[in-house]
Length: 229
Image (cartoon, rainbow, N blue to C red; front, side, top):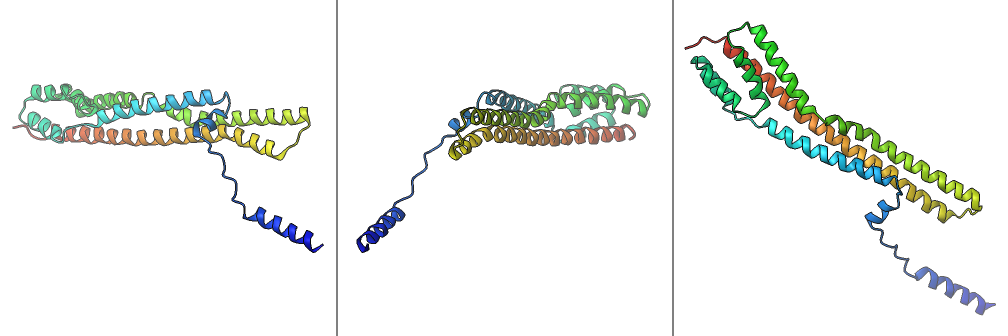
């Protein structure tokens, strides 16, 4: 009896002192592939979101570039009565603010209300051009999580169908199946979050450009009411 007890204690000590098993390395690509066919539309949504984010970001950054001395030079030309020079400068400046000011210069001599309405119309067109395709990011931010949930639900249905068909109820198999099926939901949520953040960032940049147009238009109307030299 004593010898048997000692052997059991020794066996227990050996098992408790053994090094824990090192988990197998799981690569990101393998995790994404385990998501199944639904990962294909998710990948397309992600690629589309990236394309439109960078395309709009470049366009908005170009639209925001305006020399600090633009309005002072316009003011000097108008105050001195050199309308042609002011319009030439505005026309040769590839910027939404410059196009709004150019429309105002074209209407010089008409009532202030008419000039302001003309400039507002051009500003609305410029805002539409800046916001073009921005709604794609908003749609993707909502659609991607839905695609992810659909993938997870479809995977769960397949998992429970297999359990019902085979009658096998192994905890490891079920846990592994749930782990794989959650990949689509997590991926969809991440794509949706990134799209939402990208949309918010671009909208902030557009609002700044719109503010520049409003300030420039107000300055231009003030310039028209100053006495000419």
